[in-house]
Amino acid sequence: MKQFNCGDVVPGCSVTFRFETEDRILEAVGQHARKDHGLTDIPPQLIEQVKDKIKPAA
Image (cartoon, rainbow, N blue to C red; front, side, top):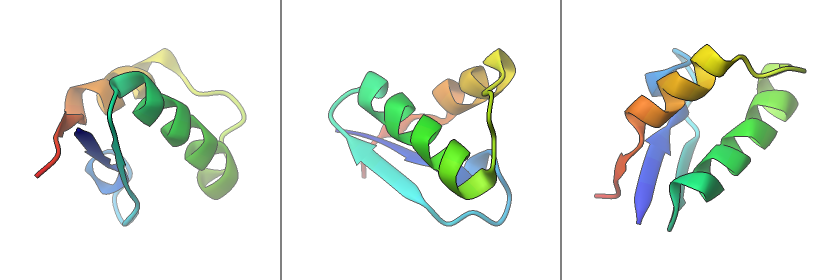
């Protein structure tokens, strides 16, 4: 199980994602970024920041 806390990249966001795979986390984070943060395009730099912050779930 892996985990990503959106607040690690977007200060003030309290959403946490827990899934079995990094790919599933990235898919959910993409949907969240579009819906809740208003991003229409997700820059490659942001994807790399998210990947860097994905950790094993506690």
